[in-house]
Image (cartoon, rainbow, N blue to C red; front, side):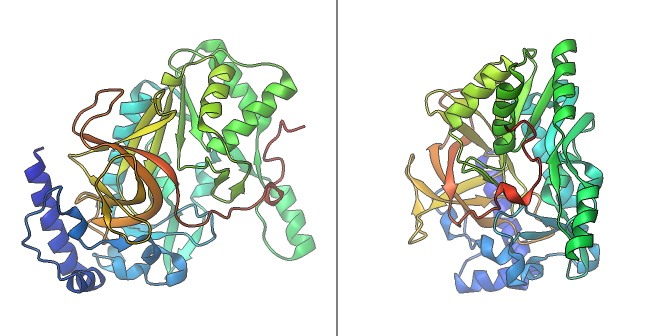
Length: 394
């Protein structure tokens, strides 16, 4: 797709969004935005954007971002909030299909999805995800992660589970609910041993903090590592390098140490690692690989599907230079038919490395960036909120 065609489609979707959504139309009026403006890379900052705060449950106005009748809403997609105040996004079936296709493409490109025969996730089982987290404005809500996990139609092992006996005991003694989430250490060991023994093309992933600490503890306690096949993949995503992932809080993780530790633990190389960035407020997924030069994951924005810009933290003015930190803004005309998501400012800090080409893998027509932090405080909860979350901890 040519850049001109992308920008024309983007301009049309901005206009349609304003027609469908009164909230976004008011933003456009406040910015005095001209819908006939010919868009290009030089003026993307002029597009009215929706701040991530508008999606927050506590603001109670997330439903004002809908572009479709409430009855046609498939379900709310909910972020795995670290602060207890999740983002809530309304999507119809068409948008969800676009989201899933975006993530499929990224997993295939960077983790060789079609060759994977076994998936091992530090996550609760799908039946648990289907029962949470609840309703907002009388419409069912599901974690955004659930829609992404659904695209893997292969043998999957979920390592987190809810301990029902401890839950029942807590309800009886405290007269309220508390989820006792645990890692099934025995199951993890058995699955890894099976992958090693039969050299199964497998992928293990999800929470960087959980993987990192669990594997370190396992090696210390059991005194062994694994020799995995060349096809073995480690998939990270959703951050967590600060030590906070969802409601979990551990020590910060050095990315270099993570790569080196897991490479040794599984007898693989840094080429076997992939990262994926996505925000609940946006339908786009950005895939990445490890960079020896930057000692970080380089994330790729396919220009045919999206653009990104960054804004200065204090002034919100656009930053057009590389290697300078700024707030990430995601712009796309695809996967936003159900809500005002054509331009969204999220609470992540990134640095753009290159505007046209990856300096390491040579992929072209991409914007390359590094994720360097969060704008809003990451709170999380200590490990005392869980029991046996790290089963091999001494």
